[in-house]
Length: 319
Ligand SMILES: Cc1ncc(COP(=O)(O)O)c(C=O)c1O
Image 1 (cartoon, protein in one colour):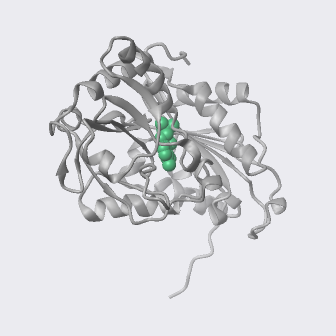
Image 2 (cartoon, protein in one colour):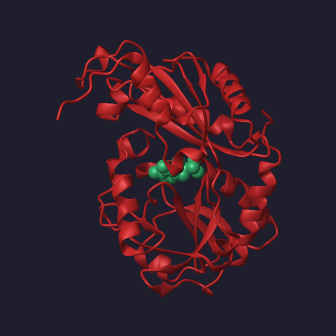
Image 3 (tube, protein in one colour):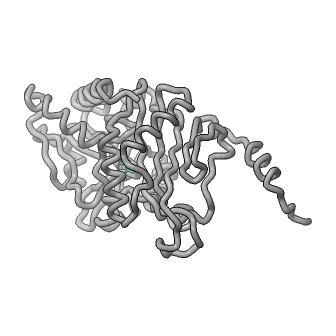
């Protein structure tokens, strides 16, 4: 058997001809490397010698667009800048320019609802671990369709369990880098176990976060608690939800909000447990390691917080 030596035209034709189901959700891609936008999924590629590919050397954000409004855009871009700064990577363009690229790529995608996947890479150049071998940082933005969970998931709640995957070191856990192998293994673990999410724990048995989402509880004293931010990603959705929760404190519906350690016993005795993230919003948890949580269905606080969050999205900036 001989392997074909392809011409540039054949390469392009082959890439364009590649078809598989997930591509139906890939609507448009902007690339600094291509200096433009393509709407053809087969051509949404990045150079193999970009250090993002072979070393995971890059940072990213997943951002939700609802009804043409980009939710928490400033918070996501601030976290992107902070992640990049923590690994000594400079953004290839200003934050204002990134916003206008987002608007133009959304126009090409021709949708009002989307999940934006924004990557800043170290860039092409050699295949070493040396970041100084890359010629310049690149930006890749992919607009994909927004896939939301069915309403039943919010009414019935989801199942969680303890992860066996060690958490990242605190200094790495706070960076949204493209080095997501532990997160991938957590997702695999939950799929293999037939549960919705697993949550990792620090060395002292305190719960941290899910594969790509945060976990918070309404404890037995009616206090809304999130874990300390030291060894996990500071979720933009969790932070906004906690701001909105002040209203429930003022109304006397919850006693207070606080940051604290969350142990096994805290989860088992919690009135409510919630998973929070960009694609989920506020998703109630009704089972922990097979044990029923709270009433076994969506709790009133999870419901109200989810409604407040969705209402808040209506005030996000228009593209
Ligand atoms: C590890 C991790 N934790 C938490 C989150 C939730 O963050 P956000 O609410 O900004 O989506 C994410 C997703 O970005 C994540 O990857």
